[in-house]
Length: 137
Image (cartoon, rainbow, N blue to C red):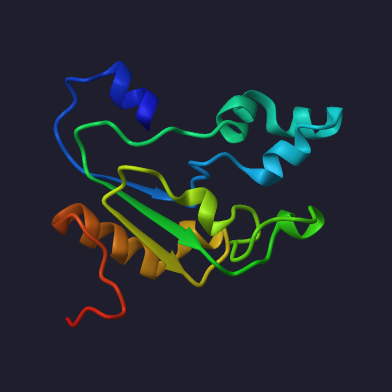
């Protein structure tokens, strides 16, 4: 998303939401990157998954959603920080300059099919923040 917005700065204004994105780089990807099979599995995503982002500097609000149900490939990789979504640690999803951060009890892939994640994305895109448990409807 960052590359798209940098390459096409004339895109219409709007907000951005990421789901389970390892903005701080992925511990699991770095571990996979240590061997040939892992590098093949990572393919062209190697650099983007293993390097740390240095903050959100684009003129758009950024909402970040992470998962905390630890079921996934991360079970095969000892040392993945907790809480995590089974693939990406919650701490890896944080990014300096983000507008809001939310953790849902779901797996990494579960974020894609989660009705709650979809509702939270809509709320953020309309309002610039997520609906947190402490908020009242």
